[in-house]
Amino acid sequence: MPSSPIPGGRRSRRITTRQSASLVITLSGVQKMFPCLIVDRSQEGFRLRGSFRLKRGQLVEIVLDDPVDSVQCEVEWTGKTELEQVGEVGLQIVGKMTFGLRTRSR
Image (cartoon, rainbow, N blue to C red; front, top):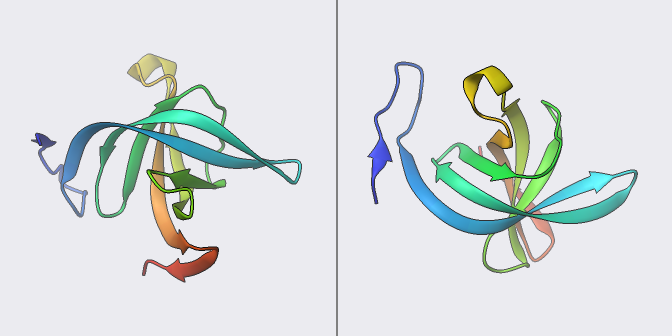
């Protein structure tokens, strides 16, 4: 898989991917699932593209292939119009969910 170079402040290499996933967002106490595309990923997190509105610091879950195996993440950034990143979001992994049990990634 092609990967992008590591900029000065980045800790790990990004791997370009076009993997379908689902993003789970809790809105008013109700979990909603939204389809998304994983644009790239690293050991620390993901860059997603989709039709959802998120805020920096918000906690979300990404469901990859198996619904019982998801990754809990925190929103690090949301796309800006002037940077042509509209519809994109950067997520940092904070924990892995397996069969409903949360484990810390750090």
